[in-house]
Length: 96
Image 1 (cartoon, rainbow, N blue to C red):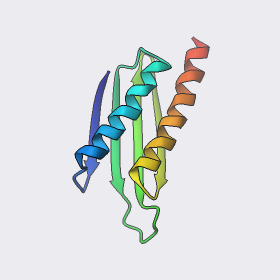
Image 2 (image 1 turned 180 degrees about the vertical axis):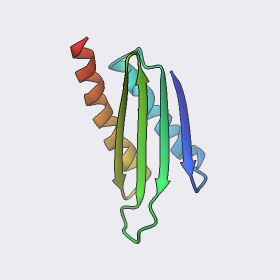
Image 3 (image 1 turned 30 degrees about the horizontal axis):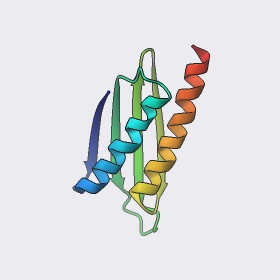
């Protein structure tokens, strides 16, 4: 699986990138036929404390799965997105 991480309008540190890689790689435990995974990290310009956005798009044969969450930290948003994608992957696998 190829993982691409895009941090938009800021530079993500190594610790955050490793954390995201670890979470996304765990999705292969549920479905090992994932082709690519794109992660987008964005900072919302609002003054709200929950201004960190994580979006993950996964390409699997015949389908594209997507999830987006906004939280106080990128780690929390990544956890929620990974869980949402896990559910989508499991549901897709059951259909096959």
